[in-house]
Length: 284
Image (tube, rainbow, N blue to C red; front, side):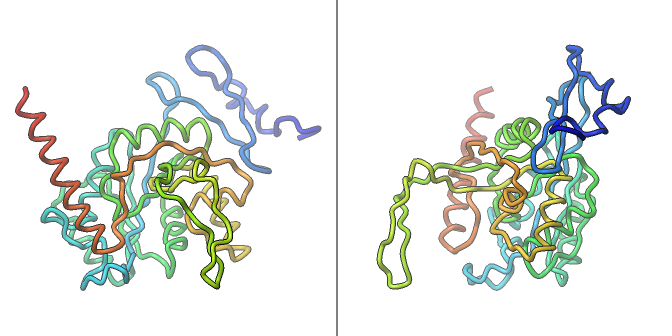
């Protein structure tokens, strides 16, 4: 590549002849230093893409204070993990789901999934000591073009949110769900004294799923492992590569179950959604 132009592979026949229905060539763009990728809408007769999902499910949940790990907590009479998996298993654009559990619980997860009709769950594998390592292990067994990473204990994501996220990631290579913060946030020093009040208008609470071109996320995890970086989420690792991460509006109901209070709220959300579903069915 010379003078900041396109890399050499862009002149390969498979790239030069790659067009969408309109006849317009899809040109690669740089999403991070040394990382080039293509973006295109996935429509019938255009570009066929594959979507995989990684569900880290190894969380111990010390703050929950429960006798079982969070993915196995009952919600509406069934483990939280099953609620989460059904959302993705029934989404028409999802091809493959990998569950990454604690090593001592892989057989328990497999037994839980048996006879549940979750046809897209292809593997249950042991995770690492930290969530970041678990996601990296999940990436190594996926072969899809795009990947969604989603918390096992965030059961209220919807097909509509996933649709919005997939549209964004195909254009921008990296995208996350997030909601604007409702509360004022203070930066507080060690002495317990307020140091600064950030502008709330620029602060968003990030949720999952987080979506990426799989190869981009792999590069981010590989780089993080090399330099010893531990990120608070997958998007942070991609940001460290210099890539842009696009924010897609999420939903305040898309909560993560962390404390006992969250479980009570989750039961209320589930009841509300079930009642709404029943009302809609009786109208027709």
